[in-house]
Image 1 (cartoon, rainbow, N blue to C red):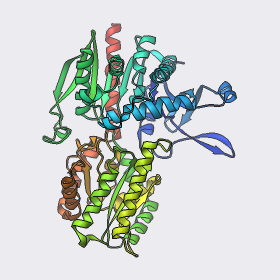
Image 2: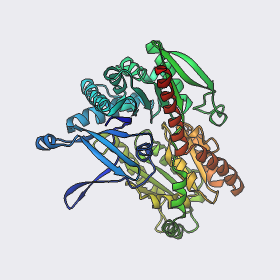
Image 3: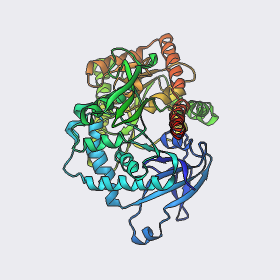
Image 4: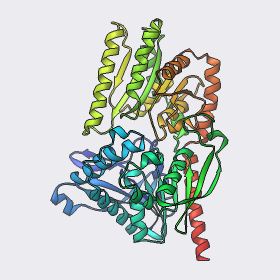
Length: 500
């Protein structure tokens, strides 16, 4: 039976684990994150389907591979169409083209861009496979919803396969300026595919504005409508400020709606975890181990975009500048490797480990270690306990599409205290302008920000946190979901009007 909504994302909507040697599907543990957020649409807007890949190399396994399976979990009943990709396809499409060529440009790192090993025909081939799978699942009047940059070409292919379906796309990364985007040799092909969509969504107005400039410069798309940026989204003078938000483009007789609304966290769930007795016990253990020392928490993936190195260097300067804090502050840096097989991330991890060792060697004592480096994921309850224990949450990426950790910290601060230090170049800085802003490209700015956070009086903490918690609630996961449903309803209304 064709589906009314088809979600297309590279990750599968469940975890695969071995139980007594048998591969078994298991529902995701945490309802926070993009996969559970997207799953919340399943079964609630008619029949739903999901398209993802699975790596399958063995010839016999490929021959017996079940492409389409039926799933029923707490989110509803839906189909999962799985594309069996070989390890060579995954490496080419994802690890090389997506991560070595496209990812650096999305985040403004021209010097890390690597075009030489790119196999663009394989990228096209995989995107075509995703488009074909979506076409096989979607009803003639349904919606196909693509997610993220590694599927840039799929909307254009789907438009050729099924000209009348509605196509939406959401970017979970930054979208760069025209000068930066134009480094990509396939720039026009990519933009023309995105302009085949009915709706293209971004986290914040800046990314929508950048896409508008790129689409005009490369393809001649014109701005058909814009609106004043929402008052809580236009902090003047900040790095990512935009006073106007483009809302519609015109291209070859078609309109493309633009949306700028950030994905949020499940505030109620974070609150439930924070109130859980087990979380309380973990919090007591953390506080007992800390004693009178202040805790600074920084959580991210191991990636050159995340500013972990810059954070450690600023932390080292803190003790050089303020030796009175030696023994009184601890930084817990959680840096989780994202792609273990990529040399660029291994180099970043080595630098993080070397800096951690240097700081601990320079300033550590028998009874105190300045930096605790954690290079593995932490169970969510324990992470929430650390959020509650941390006097400061320090999030300083050089560029970040949004940042859910900053939002989780605010959501976990039920007592209304604590200080958030946030990079101006994180998308989350737009709605969370009440945080202490830092420019990670400036030593002086990073130093001033961490000083301000550590020395912040309780009254100021409470005043800032009150605003931050209101913003995190206003732009939570439910608000993003409601915005997407509004956009889909608009697509349905267009279909009804066209039929009339």
